[in-house]
Length: 285
Image 1 (cartoon, rainbow, N blue to C red):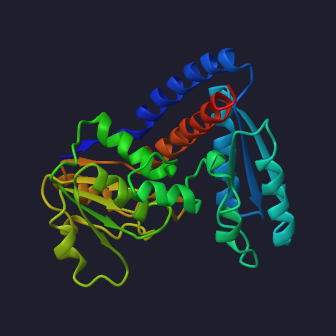
Image 2: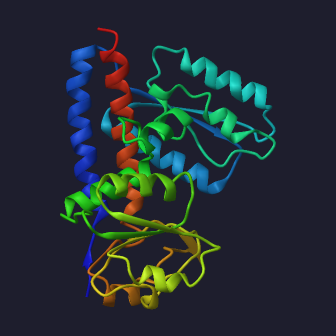
Image 3: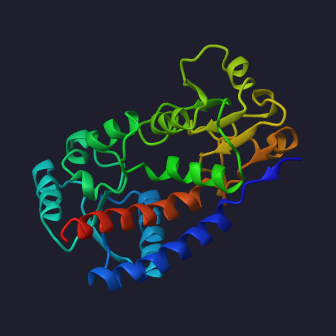
């Protein structure tokens, strides 16, 4: 049976560390860290995510503001909101909750966010820095995964890391991070042929495909570390992209859903917000 990678417990430790650090920095700079989330439309999942982020911020001593707009907002109006936040000295982090309505150019709006306030690490400047191995804001989910690996002493050096999923949010930044950790990295996706033959070579298998229970034991090398990024609702029950009951029997380490990667994503959002705050306020001295 696999060892469980308890993201929830680690997230609680991380949030407490952030809270203590925030207290110290507020005394140093005389200003409260401030995260602004821009939420467009009424997507239920987005509403839930934003509520969770808001509660976590408050507990960590970070000011949280949510700007809510209807789905028919114009691109120009949304761009103006981002511009105003960039120029607001009281704001240290800006998060555009995705997805946004299709009539708006998502890439354009994301790249309007100032790199120093880009808590998601999605703008081109931070993406380029990450891929070049430079200091960058790292997307919260991949950062959370690295924190889990570190907590449990799972070293990527010389390991074959296979990532299922090539999104800008998880797959691609995760590949960059694992390369920095000296892993040999393979990215699989919907067009990959004979995917099982590849995943069964993985010492570290990271699954972020968005298909519930897709990965069963036939995809997994015995003793591998399995990181399940998927969050799907099936018949009212949260489940991952990995068929946990089967995978647990063959893997060496595995993250559960819920209670694995998800809590660490929010913990790392708080961490990134504090990083942005310290860079902005520290740069004024």
